[in-house]
Image (tube, rainbow over all chains, first blue to last red; front, side, top):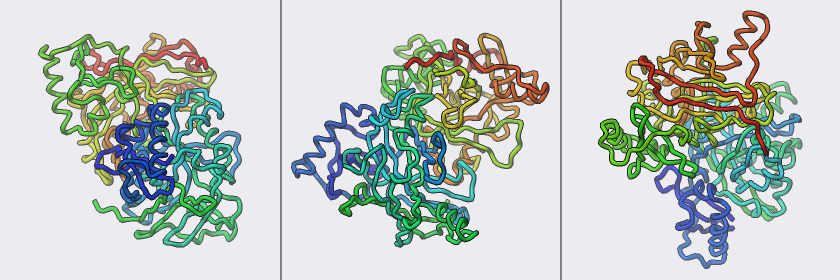
Amino acid sequence: MKLATLNDGTRDGQLAVVARDLKTAHIADGIAPTLQAALDDWNFIAPQLATLYADLNANRARRPFDFEPGRCMAPLPRASQLAVGAADGDHVDEAPRMAQCASDDLLAPMGDIVVAHDEWGIDFSAGVAVVTADVAMGATPDDAHRQICLVMLVNEVWLRKLELPQSRPATGFSPVAVTPDELGDAWRDAKVHLPLRTTWNGHLVGQPDAGADMAFDFAQLIAHLARTRNVRAGSIVGSGIVSDRDASRGYGSIAAQRSREVGEHGEAVTQFMRFGDTVRIEMLDEKGRSVLGAIEQKVVRFEP
Amino acid sequence: MKLATLNDGTRDGQLAVVARDLKTAHIADGIAPTLQAALDDWNFIAPQLATLYADLNANRARRPFDFEPGRCMAPLPRASQLAVGAADGDHVDEAPRMAQCASDDLLAPMGDIVVAHDEWGIDFSAGVAVVTADVAMGATPDDAHRQICLVMLVNEVWLRKLELPQSRPATGFSPVAVTPDELGDAWRDAKVHLPLRTTWNGHLVGQPDAGADMAFDFAQLIAHLARTRNVRAGSIVGSGIVSDRDASRGYGSIAAQRSREVGEHGEAVTQFMRFGDTVRIEMLDEKGRSVLGAIEQKVVRFEP
């Protein structure tokens, strides 16, 4: 099934079920008020949402309405954990490298990237993220795999010229989160095997396969976190920047492209984003249909 | 006022108001169900909680009951942000150094420190943390100062021989969170000027002043985070390890003591915690009264 969180003026928004074709939606009224509430009791709530989803797809739902991505918040507008892998193909480590990020203010799919200075090295980075149910300490990758509830797209915005944590402003998410079964054969080995298309100011800059060169799969990333503690329901675990060894597939972040340029030509040519620039991140299935809707963000100058 | 979260079997617990002397408490029923709900609408909710607090202290509250720290969860059992300063006195940087930590599973004041192997370098580290209301991007330290709602004690547990993020298992908190006015003169310059007492297996190992050598105050730490993004209500910002240049005040973490030993004798003598070890962290006011209750944790072997 496909889920979204609509902006109703509250901090956590209103949970809605979205039709497979992303054309209509239906409030999850009477089932769960928010996505976090659904995740807190997923085994009980998910089947009820799935029934509504089947009704919506079959035009049997009572009060469907047009689905407008512009009305969406991030599927989880705030979360109790956002941990991101550095599982790119350029490095092969024995264990995943991961980082904790702020998750108190997660951006809507069309939320502006608000930055005070565009000399800060504003960068997008296209990735995939999963949302977990409870994962107990000591979970194996197989255990963790079973606790993956949802898949989303993510734009990890970076300010490359600042230091952590300032270099990581608010992270953007796709309008829709889907259960792994929605991905069909493209979901295997706890990876998403579909191209992740990134356009920058309307120009396609990359369409790497999101699974091909992922050094550690999502089950391994989650199990890595759970080695020393419990991972609780609603945790978001990101892939990190999706990259592809095949340079002809383009790039998913400006930093990756600049690094490639340094390797090939001795210096980076591609400049970072400027005010007014736009980035669009989308995943299409084998028939060219958008699976999760698009992240469409614009860089806007901060006005105090 | 003083607040606590009681374990009622739910993920976020039940908000309660605690008497100044920590002897009685009262459910915040009809005001706010959880601390996060109170923080989401703090300007509206806090005065109502303050009225109940005044009634409880004056023995006018309707249904007071004995306050038992053993029934407490962390004041925020999960939070959307936990950012921790490295604001110790040993390094003077131009800007704070800070790190994001997991906040999906915050430990009760008497929650066991559950670890699979005690060769992982199990360490406590005593600190102070504040909880914020909304802090807008671009906030000055003065702006940030006004958005500090609550003060707590924190035990940042470390597994010193592992890498991040595995080296940071669940973080423990004091049973009670207090508004800064409860600290009286001890709250000044956005620091807590009281000794933070740590005992390890019943032996006092440190009582450094929590404010004396804090390189950056809480207002500066929050403003640092807010330089590139909004900081949302319920964010927890920790001081990092409280240290004191005066070695006679002891230590707040084993790592700090070991580092001192290396400096003085060329090698670290103090070993890390073992299964069965206990740590107690408490802050006493100038009259020797516990301000926030004690963190009392025991190291327990993980049983799958």
